[in-house]
Image (cartoon, rainbow, N blue to C red; front, side, top):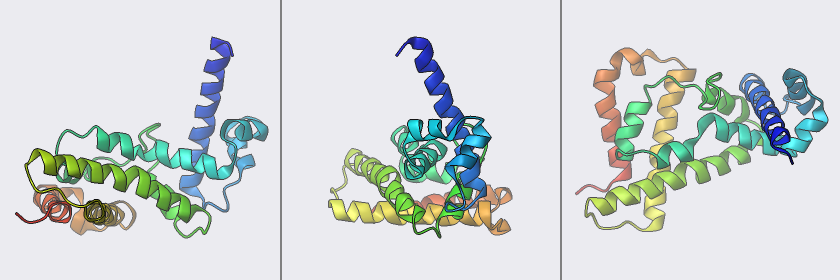
Length: 202
């Protein structure tokens, strides 16, 4: 493939991904059709199949592009509880195009029998696994006794569940008790909650 053709193919994938991200954020998974995404991207639906293969694979790519969880977690320099407590208050837009709230994609798809397993695998592989790895690094660097793999995965899952609940309260339900105007008081509390979830008491 020539360099121009490669650039054109990459640009087409980005157009499809952008259109799909908006669609999945606004419509339930079952109601989102590849032909509608193709129309939004102003291309033939065959090109969507060629670029991503299936709706399931396209959805996986959309979720990963919107959240970029693994990359974000692996690039953290602070302990996870500090980074997450701070980032919870950052504007929540997808990390590729800055167009949609990733939580909208989750909310639209959680009740879907087809999409829920995809989201579950994403959370396990792209969220819980890297949180567990980062937490293990922090434990080791602090000279703490190592946790078993099962224990550290449980703690990572608990921390991820706490963060998801807080984001749901803030972004979807718009509950003022966890709003931005309370950040100065809430950030240390969130940090303490996540620290308790991730690390055994000394």
